[in-house]
Length: 311
Image 1 (cartoon, one colour):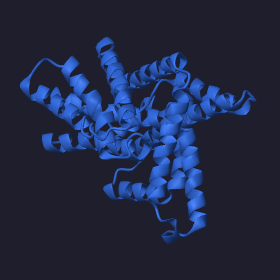
Image 2: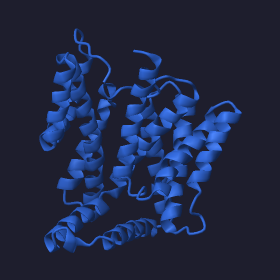
Image 3: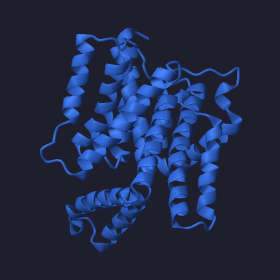
Image 4: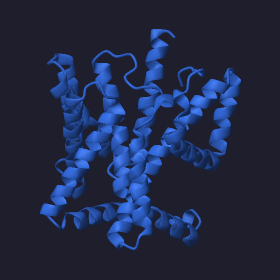
């Protein structure tokens, strides 16, 4: 693989992660929110972890300036976006400094855990904080729905369906924010790697995995959903299941990509494989989720005798 092709192949994972941030994050409904959740951690990582150089420092300052746009018209969501981004930045920088040899995903997971723990401590110190966060998120979704003319898209039935989906989204926005934050920090890892001159800062999708012990987070979430422990337990369990479900879905997709690269040798066959997966996306998603969870015990990719090309 030539240097140019290798560079472009390394860009695809970062582009995919950026798309996930845009789709998942309740804080990135605007380009300014997207710049905050990616730009602030990237700038802090460059300034704290890299030797002082004019080029990297200029990039960091440019990212901070972009994240600071909109200050004059700032509302609660503006500060919420940047406050969360600062917590992510601190967690990611701390995780990278303490364990520089760990992968980007492990450091991202620790950063999200540190940021979430900080918010939990703040919620204990200020009991009204969770209700305020819920209100801000609900107001943002409500404002977005008010801009749509549902009569042009199918009338009340479509509106009822959309509002049901939004109500579920509002309940699990902490999990969606966690998944989006992990994706955003993956983009940060790519930017940091490029600043360091690495050709492929991010591993290919087929190598994505995480610690098998995290399956207990999924088990605990399911238990909280089933047990009659109150509304708080039901919501906490729903968020835990949603977050871990997203991670296991991605892990299952990684296994499917690995299987496709292992079994299929023709470029046309791989193209048909990908097209079929996109057309049958409900089946693909279900199979990926099952494959991701079962990979905790099967771990097919670590078995000797089968190799796959980069994917």
